[in-house]
Image (cartoon, rainbow, N blue to C red; front, top):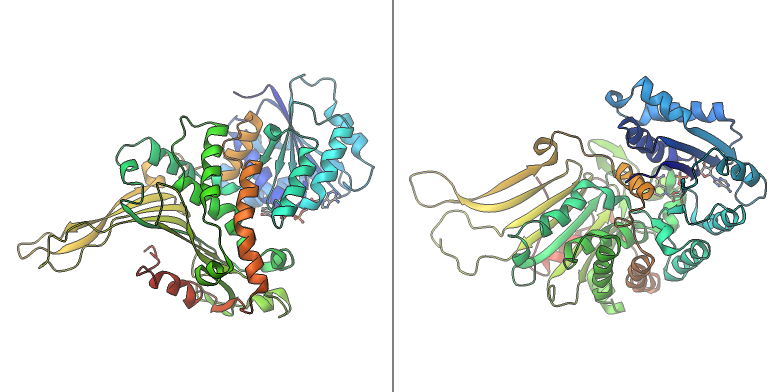
Length: 489
Ligand code: NAD
């Protein structure tokens, strides 16, 4: 259920994330009547805005980032009337008094939920939390939302978690991974656990291997400064790809609840086989884009985007992981992600084993292994690849065909954006789709030996032309095992 009132405070309220994602998501939920009636939205930033100027800035952002058919004056006015702005530098002491006054407004309900969304650099999280504590805003009604990156490695992630945890209980801390808010990702759990036919096959007896791809066609753009300190392994694998792997590999919890799902995901992360330096050399590939053509347009190299050529940061990773438990022993999980690839797609492919006996030796066309292809974005959906007989009077000809589920055609209503779902979960206090501290740290613990080995290795990231599927070595990683990446058609 919804709380009677909500004060939703965004630190970094004039930033890219707030204007492009958070405020449009709140607007869209408000338009559907989903926000608590008595909701205020407080933008906190260093900008010297008064309330009117902030409303103008947010109005312009909504007009730019919300689909035209979902913009209407009544909803816009209602949303803008909720907005407040407080100017403060979180490192300074001025402005907190004003924020305190706003949040302490006597007319407010006693059980107003207070959300603090930290859409600022992680280095600021600790001091924000301490100040919130000092002004008495960090009580039991408060929730804090933390954006990625949570840390740079295990030790810094622990430091961020410690700093936030000094003020807030774990149950008040919502670490967001927007991939978990996507409909198709949640549907993965429903498909696995609300149907009977898949689960008996979902193990090493019947699954040959799993592929998870998160490909971007964009380059680093003007975020090269940030990105160059992270790289694809930290920016994408440690969070998004490992979270997707967890949902594919986890055991069924007794029910879907905040702790039960996260307990099961944690067990998967803890079962990932740790990589030795030799494993890293053999089972990981890092790449970096050169100039090339993406969708027919010429694009620059990473070095040119960055403005110098002194970097060894990877913009592409492919790796082979193993989940060492009873269900998955011997089943490789191949992960890859990169920037400036040939297209934008996030997908999971579960490749089943060949039938135990080939019954159509004289047929034309071979059988192809069954595959379940889960499209996370764009065009959320699911496709089951089967082998069928091609109609015709002659001999038997085998042809691959697919059963298709497209969200857009199967369901009339549009899928909400991931942030719409996740922000409502914060307001309602539902932590299921957020990362718990132990998950984040277990993921870092697995990733760290890869970072360490890469830093020590004489190898450099392999170059790939923009607009391709990445370095050749990523294909070799699978070919060595007699497999190939399944490129969707
Ligand atoms: P941004 O630079 O566009 O905006 C930063 C915001 O923080 C501004 O409103 C600025 O006024 C405010 N701010 C900065 N320093 C401050 C200070 N000392 N005191 C008070 N306010 C301060 O950044 P962004 O792209 O919105 O990203 C914010 C955070 O979210 C970053 O940590 C980023 O890594 C993370 N993140 C961003 C995105 C995205 O799509 N932009 C996605 C995931 C995570």
